Image (tube, rainbow, N blue to C red; front, side):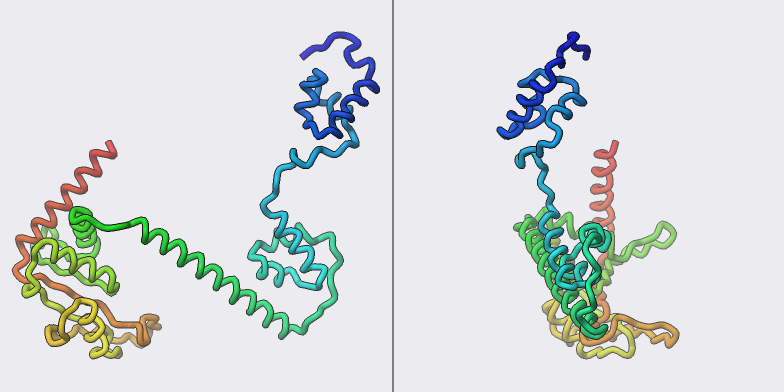
Length: 286
């Protein structure tokens, strides 16, 4: 934008007015509009040396962390300790406190490790609490399932985890295997919804030979709401000494295999239901 000649001839007079407006708490934009100064270079020169009002400064979400980091550094804390205590990155800690003198060591190496370990325990506890909060909130979002919602959930669950026939090998058997108790309970609730008689269900445990089979039978009987006497002979996995198993201990119960007797018709219906879901998804993608 061009300006009339001599527009800024009375620079000192303009500066006095600009400084007065600045001290009244006006922003640069407000001063610009008040004095009709649309040249940014001139405008900045007019208020040079005058700090901007506090309300124009953008708040920094990490200001509190920065101040706390500096306090800890002045108390002799190391970068590692501050990082663990505040849960922020090492690069941030370095940026915030690098102008401060390096503290003399206040603790032995063993004490430093103990402090860091205690900080990690607190950090993990906080993370665990946040994780549980998120999971609980998400659980509440589900609400009460309708029969149709459970029906569609069961179809997708079976197609993801259940046995499926191949074009070259039509077996048409309804067999479901899983190690997650929640998945098994949803699957059994789905079969109940479909009207599948519990008398048609066959149960078998698939588990490593070194595990406690009796304990696994009791566990899955409780999950499925059946007696341990209904279980068929378990399928035992041979142990490979070259592998290191992680699925060990009291929490390991193997997998439960649930088979629906005389399930050919049901299997074909499942295939059809899944085809309907896929067709609807494909239509939405077009």
